[in-house]
Length: 210
Image (cartoon, rainbow, N blue to C red; front, side, top):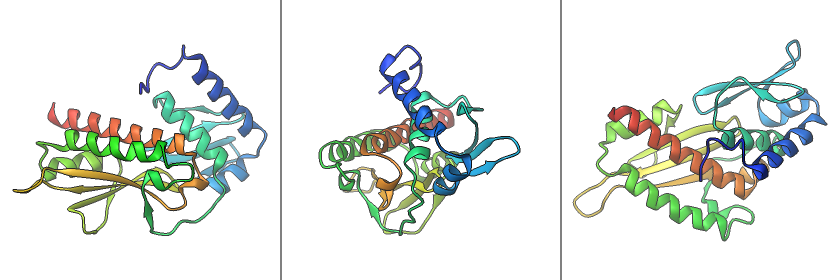
């Protein structure tokens, strides 16, 4: 999937306009309360953290102060639209476990594992950790060799678990969502989040190797 240069993509533009139109019918205070964002009434802006960046969204047009790629922008708008304030537990699920995720989500679980194996091969543990840190990840202790939690949005994180290579097995990785993910994004948007993360990791590795 191409993330950049969607300006000429008519279907994409229609989705973008529809997302903005839905949000314009709601107050900034309500959107912020349900999404975990901050609403600044004096400036009529919503402030939200995504990965390593604080994004400011100017109402009522929902314009942003960032050059984030347009797919990332679209899923941000969808997140603000769908967010209902549901609190999650620490339980993690696969994309296939999402509502309506049996086909699309399960397919992405397999694709992500394949891409991660290629992306992580020949990368030492320190470099993998640095790449994750550059995207704002926090690290937690699990049975995996490395577990990085990426703050995609305030109430929507993606967890990457990595098992480093040994004498028997190559390096491998899997990505997970929190069990309340369906309250914030559709399965299609969740998959896009996963693809954005993989793309950002690839770019981070390229930067570290340059």
